Length: 398
Image (cartoon, rainbow, N blue to C red; front, side, top):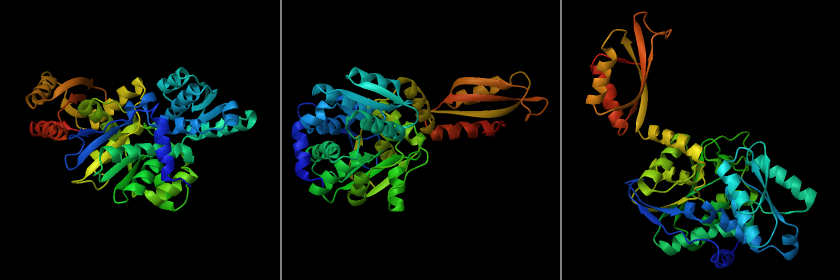
C-alpha cells in the first residue's frame, strides 16, 4: 500500500539526480483555460521515467543489486534504468520492442545498459524480460506496476503543488499507468479537490477500456505514433489506483497528437514525443472540462526519433490547417493551370506542388486532373480558397 511518506522519501533521494522541472505558462494551447506545462521532456534522459526507475533501484537490497537488473521498456524507462543502474554500479539488461525509435535504443546503450531487441510491442518485450529474469536470476524493475516506481513518479505531483498551490486540474499521459498513479495519489492525498485527468492514444486505450469495463482488459493490438504509451494491458496496481484517484480518462487521435507536437515546437520551443504530447492534445481539443481553470499539462517525454518527427510535423500541419491537398477537374487546354494558380495566389495560398494527370480513368476524354498541395494559414483559409475556386467555375473533387 503506497503512503504519502514514500513520495516524500523518493523526492529526497531524487534531489541528487532529477531536475525539478519548472512550470511554463502558455497562452496558445487553449485560450479558454490558463494552461501551464510541466516539461518532463527536459528531465535528464529526456523523460519522467528516470524518477521511478532511479528510486526503485536505490531501494534494492545488496543481494538484489548483486544479481543485476533487467527491465522492459518502450524506450524511456530503459534509459532511466540504465542510468540508475550505472550510477549505482549495477549491471543492467533492457528488453526493448524491435520497433523502438533508434534514438531511444542508442541512448539506452549510451547510459551503460545491454540491450535485447524483441519483435513486437512493449508487452512482448515484457514477456521476454520475465523469461530472462527467471533464467538468469536478474532483479526485475517494472516500468509502471511497482509501488517504488509509482512513488518516484509521484514526486511530480509534489512539485506541481509546490509550484502552483492553487492548481485546479492536472492532465497526465497514460500508458501502463505508473505516472498518473503516482501523480494522482499525491495530489488527491494533499488536495482532493484538484481534478486529475488521464489521456491515452485512441490506438492504445488499454486503461480507458479497462476502466470502462470495470476490470483489467488486454487489448489484442495497439498502434500509435505515441510509442511510449503503446501498452496493451495496464498493471494491477495502476488500474486500482486509477479507478480510485483519477477523475476521468480520455483518448486523442493521431492527428490531434501530431498537432500538439507541432504546437509545442512552434509556440513553446519544446520538442515532445507523441506520448508526452497527449496531455497537451487533450487540452487543445477540449477533451476534458477545463474552461476558466488553472491547468497543468504534464509533458512526460521528448525522446522522439528525428525521422518520425518530420512525418509528425507534416500531420500536425495538416490537422491545424497549415497545409492541404485537393484535386481539380480541368479541360485539357492551354491556360487552365495558369488560371487555377492565379486564383490560389490571389487568395493567399502558397503552392508547394502540382501533379498533372491526363490518363485518369475517371476523367472526361478531353479533360485532366491536377493534384495541388498548398501552404495555408488555417482551416478557414482553406475554406476560402476552395470557395474561390468553385466560384471561378472549377470542380474540386476533394
